[in-house]
Length: 189
Image (tube, rainbow, N blue to C red):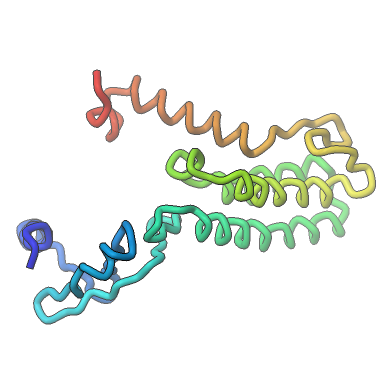
């Protein structure tokens, strides 16, 4: 057994934490040769299931550290919420109310934990995410939809790429400036 696994077991015992072997997964990052080299992880008679994709705290991570699985899952979840936007539109909600629903129930799904993954997206993945916002604007504005950034009542939405960039910048600045941030100690002075 590796010393890292022994350290985790020791920590869990010292802190009175039980490891749930049903929820514990083995995700090996790297090339296929590295994955083939690694033995099955077995601790105290429990075999840890090896996976190639795992969802942790709402972020889908795969063994290649590419974000295709995460983007696909995120877009699927946001698309489900567009259905409710359509229902609200059919119920004659105002454009302001529809926009409020989009910005509070759909867009957060598309931006969740973006400082972790935003800078690693391909252009195709960015467009896939952006297409959800375009669909929302078509629902909100209907026939009055004239373009990507403009909403028929002169309200404006920024592209999701720009929003994610700003969110990442704000997160970094908070981590650097806030001495109480849990990430502050990881950054050089």
